[in-house]
Length: 237
Ligand SMILES: [Zn+2]
Image (cartoon, rainbow, N blue to C red):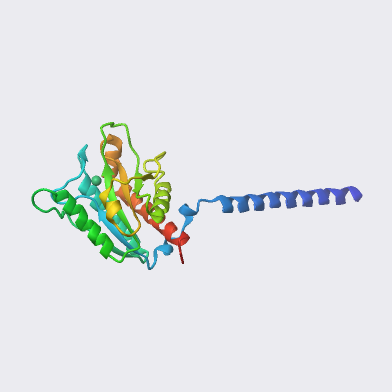
């Protein structure tokens, strides 16, 4: 009799211990989960964002491996706009078609950029996202990278969040958000924002990815996720 009781007690104790361990593991898992990956996209609701698809019209941007930058930029920008709108954000664009803002003669590129800056500053948006693809002589280089102006604290925070969101573009992407004082669009804009180089068209593999609508959609969704996280963290500030 005594023996049986003890066995029951041991069994109860064992069950209790296992349950405790499982509960603790669940709690730890909850605490260390990546908030960025689990953020509710509903956090986008009511926020206003302006999207800049880099280049366009007479300015193709970088072209390599059969991929033309201006087209990829516009495709991703449109997809991003759709995700944001579907989640209740107000969205505007510097361009929604294959157009440019070049003026004739010298300084055409600068006037194109200044027109975009003007639109970004006048949009009444909280943040801007400029979409580009990168090119470099070293064809082995790849990976999405986010650029920001270090003079704007909020841009840096957003850039670092967005870079984290793009760690799988492509898988194993180790690039870090990078400050850059030499980008006119980042310098002359008055609202926080980032410039996303979504990948390298000079890398054959990545060029194929960048031209793939499924990859573009995933990129757009992760950029939207980063914005949702940014707004959820900065609410009421
Ligand atoms: Zn570009």
